[in-house]
Amino acid sequence: MSLKNCKRCGSLFSFQEHNVCQQCLGKDEADFQKIWEYMREHPGVSVLVLSRETGVEPAVITRFLREGRLASEEMDEDSGGKVCESCGVPIFQGRYCQKCVVKLRSELTQAAKDIRNRAEVKIPGKVHSLDSIYKRR
Image (cartoon, rainbow, N blue to C red; front, side, top):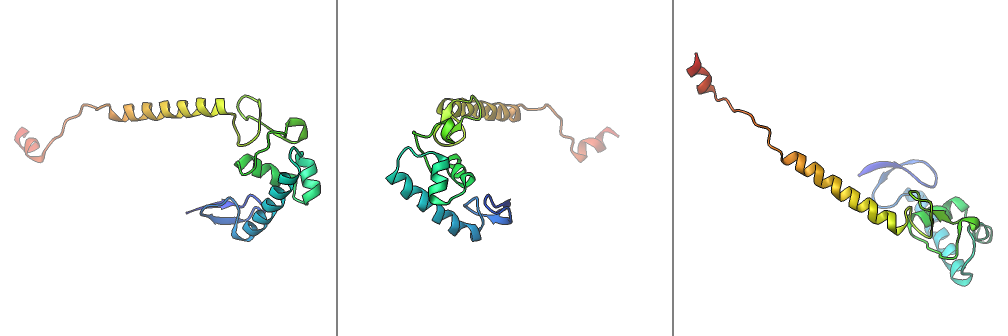
């Protein structure tokens, strides 16, 4: 377990599975249910309208979108949607578009292979035993 700051209230907590502390977890789930039900009844709603109608902060809605808990193809950049952090194209969930995810994954795989290959390179060295040292004297 590691220590993290709660994404909702900022307090320090022991991270286990969620990005929010135990006190905020119930609030997060209640907000998520409100958002989910409203989006089901009103597809294509913007983040700002969703926030106004449900009473949930826009930052919380954006966090749910970024975490991939919510996805709405109707949300665009003007209505509070998101763009890929790498190339800037509009996306509907997560932090990166699918093209950039594939590119990042291949770069990380290649970097891991390079690190493994460097570790396998044997450095020539000699082992000296105590007997061989005494025989030289």
